[in-house]
Amino acid sequence: MKALGWSLLLLLIIIISATALSDHEASTIARRQLLSLPENGDLPDDYEFDIDIKVTITNPRLRRAYIALQAWKRAIYSDPFNSTGNWVGPDVCSYNGVFCSKALDAPKLDVVAGVDLNHADIAGYLPVELGLLTDLALFHVNSNRFCGIVPKSFSRLQLLHELDLSNNRFVGPFPTVVLGMNALRYLDIRYNDFEGKLPPELFEKDLDAIFVNDNRFTSHIPDTLGDSPASVVVLANNRLGGCIPSSIGKMGGTLDEIILLNNGLSGCLPLEIGLLGNATVFDAGSNGLTGVLPKTLSGLKRVEELDLSRNFLTGFVPSGLCRLSGLANFTFSYNYFKGEAAACVPGSRSGVVFDDASNCLPARPKQKSSKACAPIVSRPVDCGRSKCGSGNGGDGGKPSPAPLPSPKPTPRPPSPSVKPTPKPVAPPPPRHDASPVMPVHSPPPPRAPVHAPPPPKEEASPPPLPKAKSPPPPRAPGY
Ligand SMILES: *[C@@H]1O[C@H](CO)[C@@H](O)[C@H](O)[C@H]1NC(C)=O
Ligand SMILES: *[C@@H]1O[C@H](CO)[C@@H](O)[C@H](O)[C@H]1NC(C)=O
Ligand SMILES: *[C@@H]1O[C@H](CO)[C@@H](O)[C@H](O)[C@H]1NC(C)=O
Image 1 (cartoon, rainbow, N blue to C red):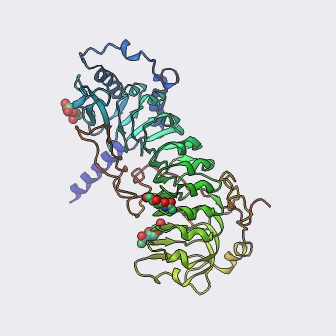
Image 2: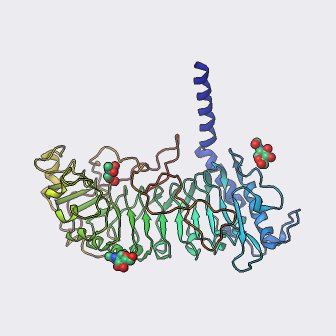
Image 3: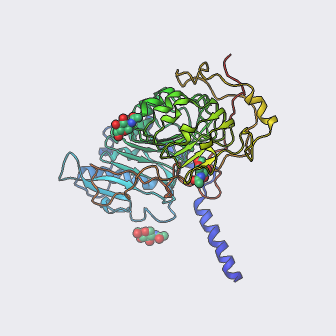
């Protein structure tokens, strides 16, 4: 019995040591990458011709792929499952995780159309040579320990349709190189350490899915948000401030899910949210939103999951909203509502979860004290006049510096969300015969059908972010 216990412990230690990558190791790897980067992280155009590869590969594209994959193998410092163990010799199409198919422009030519090393727990970096994989339609490396930056040479991947770098240790500003990938439809960089601003161009791209949650993005949500044709946009668990741009209303025709959870957003909910008539998930919980619910909100005709909890919202929760036919879960707890329609009372409608805890609702259990309610409830925010609520841009504010303590103790853990799968994202990783023509979405990293997905890096690594919540001042900003 005891022996079993010890071997379990040992096993655990082995697992942990295989997975954890200290900050020091991560920065060492990143430094190695920087040292290896040619100018700007791009490749000279004739790069491949200068390389003597000592094997004979007549297909020029597979020769380039060989150069790229061997360079990548050299940039791998730890491969605990031996995932790249068979990356030897000229037959790159037989390499584990590498998928070939016929070239789009040369139907007789085999080319590397996909790379899928998801969940390989590999530590290393992305070398510039990967820019030689110009036929790539899918590049999936979720749940590894890749460090450093995404080299500029990735801009050569003009057929890339799906890029999944989630759940790694990438750092630096938003990888703007993706903005130049014209075929890209699915971008997943969640669960990394990217920081700084989200570029406005991100939302001008023809992307169907944008996952940038669980990074360290700051600044505001660009006003271009509304230009995005994406069906799923997940910005959760960053440090974004300012208002929700009113341009969001322009997404009505296409948006299915938007998750703004756990940022530092402030201001009123823009009226235009009511134009999101096809959205099934709207989540703006754990922010610093103020003011009353706009009357238009009941325009969320298809909403199933609606989370406005943990903000500074006031006023009344109307029945029109609570009676929406698809509604499954409307959470508005931890706000300052002083009234709710009978239709919104938890338990009033079978099959629908309502959560009204910790508001200022008379005659409801588990409410805030009147002392806690008074300062907010007695100073209503005039959303019509506030710079966010009245339909002007989202660039309204920076995260409020107000040092008010967050009204609730801790944010809920960002990941194990229980919501339904965003969409039938699905098909498994590409197979050998997968055509690059019709690539499928990368299954969101870690399985669990969740919104804001992958399980946070296991064990040791700290929860993606210390919550960056900055509650706004209790009264209307700006005047
Ligand atoms: C890794 O895989 C290669 C090729 O499959 C094999 O030859 C090698 O022995 C493996 N190494 C380990 C440590 O298992
Ligand atoms: C919802 O989507 C359909 C097409 O799928 C579109 O015709 C309709 O206008 C959309 N609804 C809104 C409110 O934009
Ligand atoms: C309802 O939604 C909230 C917020 O998204 C979530 O925390 C809660 O677990 C959900 N409840 C159910 C029963 O799904």
